Length: 160
Image 1 (spheres, rainbow, N blue to C red):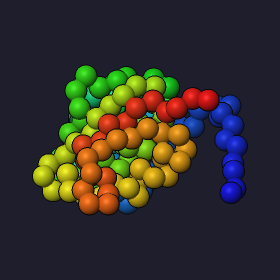
Image 2 (spheres, rainbow, N blue to C red; image 1 turned 180 degrees about the vertical axis):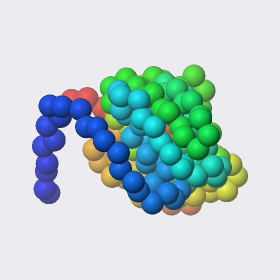
Image 3 (spheres, rainbow, N blue to C red; image 1 turned 60 degrees about the horizontal axis):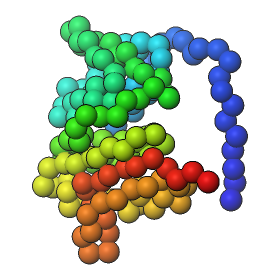
């Protein structure tokens, strides 16, 4: 198994990057904004329901979002600053939202629950859960056949 060591940054990253606007990149831009301690402005983020679910989720985790036309200004919490959501996070029908949040929340020191609509609640999640549990995450869900489906409860990782 290959391992990597990631050292903390010694300076803040700044600048502007133009990327093609699509739903997949939008989810990631919102999550990276949550993990930033410096406010981030996103332009041209798709207004679809899936990106909307991710935006609502990051607010539940402590970010604030201000909209100005086609710009969103996200004030994140930093990597260690996320807050436990007061309520379960509704991912709607967004498979990307639930998969990315499962990975993000697996490293947090609080318990959270992710759920979705009827369709999302039938989607298999073992392909996300298995690698995360191999790294120490604790994730429980409903059983459907040989797989695990939402709702998912992500608890603080085991410590040794």
